[in-house]
Image (cartoon, rainbow, N blue to C red):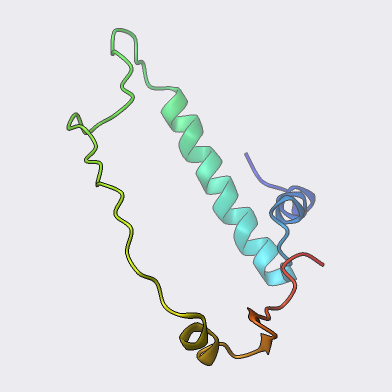
Length: 95
């Protein structure tokens, strides 16, 4: 299956990223390759193979929640490139 330019642009809009014409061509080939691999996987007969949810059967280790002292505000703000009062000023994330 070949990804069209419109489909690549649609995925880019969903991901909220801007892409160039050159990137559209690269992503089209890469996404098409991914879909071809999934098509090949879908043709494998998995009848009789039990589903697995976790390849690692060891239980997850959970660490105890320990309160530790944090940096003081002055030290944190001393390393901030832009400050606004007692806060670190950053560029807007969403338009």
